[in-house]
Amino acid sequence: MNRRSWIWMAVLVVLALSLALNFFFIGYAAHGLRQAVAARGLISEMVGAYSPEVRREFRSVMRDNRARTFAALRDLRAARADLAAAGKAEPFDEAAVRQAMAAVRAATTNLQSTVQDYLLTAMKNVHAKPAGGG
Image (cartoon, rainbow, N blue to C red; front, side, top):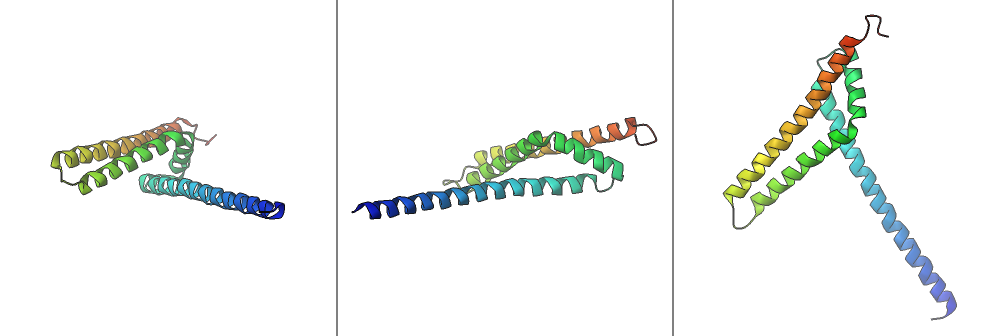
């Protein structure tokens, strides 16, 4: 190979690496968007029946505690993945499936409790504000 073909080979390798990194970062960004969509769905289900003031305050509390919420969502997602894996395992192990189901219940309860804590905080914050809204 002459010098010119080495340069072209290096350019192609750099281009391929760049494309691979771009696809990785696009996937990473899409994953973050899916988590945000899940959180928004959770918000609308939880506070749809409350006043606009409580909903606004709840969104603020959720924003302030985003890391804790996403950690609870990750825990639930991991517990569900473990349950799926236990269900597919050969030979079938009923005890392992029951244990995985208990972990899903615990993660679900943790997420629900976390979000309900945020709702309670939002309600307290709204009621603690003066009647003028200031």
